Length: 200
Image (cartoon, rainbow, N blue to C red; front, side, top):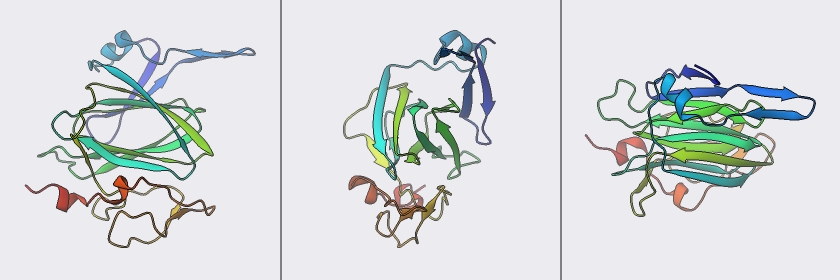
């Protein structure tokens, strides 16, 4: 294997990918994606689209998933720092409902691959963050689902977040430790918890 180091997360289907960074007094160079290196690491996904977003401190996006057209996502941060989270939604999985999170930043240059069948979200910890990701399927309008970011049955430990669960996904009363209000879209404040979203 050449330019990347791949570490399996404790939940099957999640991978932390660290590229080789070549730096000197001028700056640095790295390969941000190589199909060959990914295949040598046993990762054979095919990406169909690249996306990029910018968010300010305190923004929490998620938890999102596609219902009929699930996406695998390779995510990274090119500016700032985020805490990135995946929640296992695969029926029959031994880790169903479990979460895993990793800090992604422009400094550590880590990437996070999230296989199909997970909900995904992230929290911005820096003044602003630019977030890039590749996906294995196109976005299908009307196919998006979501979960409450603060569902106590999942129990995500969002870093720096202060506040008390009030029975809903509302950001009301939540801040970061420095007082920055938690900032969620109107839609993301209306998602239900795991047990009310999936009934087996």
